[in-house]
Amino acid sequence: MENREILSHIDHTLLKPYAVWEDIDALCREAVQYGTVSVCIPPCHIARARGAYPGLTLCTVVGFPLGYCVTAAKEAEVRQALQDGCDEIDMVVNISDMKDHRYDRVEQEIRALKKLCGPRVLKVIVETCYLTQEEKIAACRAVTAAGADYIKTSTGFGTGGAALEDVLLFREHIGSGVKIKAAGGIRTREDMVRFLEAGCDRIGTSSAAVLLEDSVREEG
View 1 (cartoon, rainbow, N blue to C red):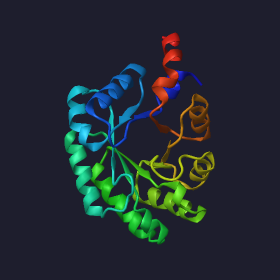
View 2 (cartoon, rainbow, N blue to C red):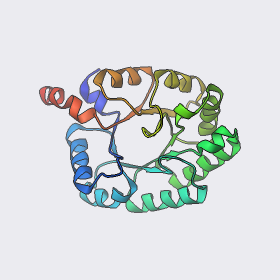
View 3 (cartoon, rainbow, N blue to C red):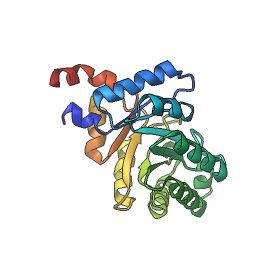
């Protein structure tokens, strides 16, 4: 798999709480330079990034990283992000509802946020490190039934990140219209290739540009 192909599946990500505009600006420049599919950045930087990089696909997070804020709060976050110029939303499910097996509530919340997103992409972070096998399968069903565009493994802030076995489980249980994003702990080129070959359409990582810089320069 060529480096440019890998980069075309990367959400170039910076979600550290102490990230400042200088860091976000550098991330966006890298995304343009290396051809990543998007940047994923904190909501407070979306409006400035949109003004500085009008052609760049901007993604942000909602209900992040714990997921247990009420639906109305997540809806407000989505509205503001879209108003600021965001193209894609990565929402965290209510993990408490997942653990309570209140899957109908999880589905309703995803559906409400997808309605607000309209044609824009909605990715649903289910935080697999906290879920049983049964709950992961239920998450696949809720994401599919609610009409979301992606199911995503992890926030990167939980007790574990992306695992290949979860990607394979997702492939078995999501609907045909749902894609997979892996995130959390994917730091090497070999990891990226493994996850893409396992069936991921997107990978969220902060490491891609640094790891692939030399190879991309050589290919160019």
